Length: 270
Ligand code: 8IG
Picture 1 (cartoon, rainbow, N blue to C red):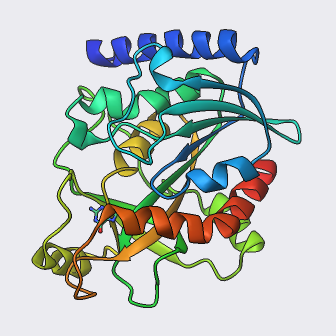
Picture 2 (cartoon, rainbow, N blue to C red):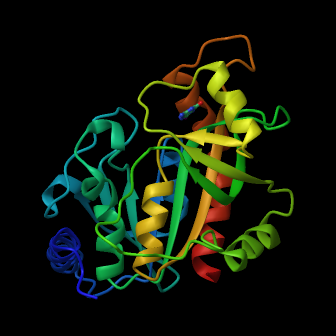
């Protein structure tokens, strides 16, 4: 079946981006992509040695993200010979640039040669034992955005979307890592307490504004996916205090060491 024209365009844009990344980094290909979400930036420096760093807006069809603490840079890292393409920041659905902008990094990573992608995020947690700063392995997701990142009749299997193999490697590194089901909302508002009760009723344990749409496109390209959430706050209605962006950044700094150690080891063993 011929792809939808929008898919063809998105793949062409990704090839242009990958060509520019190869030119600017001097690395013809990369092995693993890592997307660092809210709170994860402090862990970036523990991955390996930086070969090149580029403002993401200088790569074709990317634009700088709008949120503070989301960086907007692309880094090529050598992790003991493993070439890692690190996205410091991402485009979110709530920026209203469309699903292709949200998932351009995934198609670009695949075009750059990556076979594995590590998607990280900061999120709310529904399990009260997950105090802010707890990393959680994503076992599965609920796409509650009301949209799809795929175009046309492009049927994609989503079983074992978040690789059992990669989760196993993470638990070897850090046996106490819990697992959760990530519910992606469109945002930018946080949930109401009633929406959190709905998520709980349908099996979700983590809530955020990223990752699921990216994972769908990553699967469509054939990449193997690891999802890592950093719980930065209890979900709405659970703590008695309102949610704010500052606690997100603080949780990231507090947990950077642990998250950095997990990332550094998993990219070497993936
Ligand atoms: I950090 O509680 C962070 N991102 N939807 N809900 C949603 N996104 C988030 C949350 C949260 N915390």
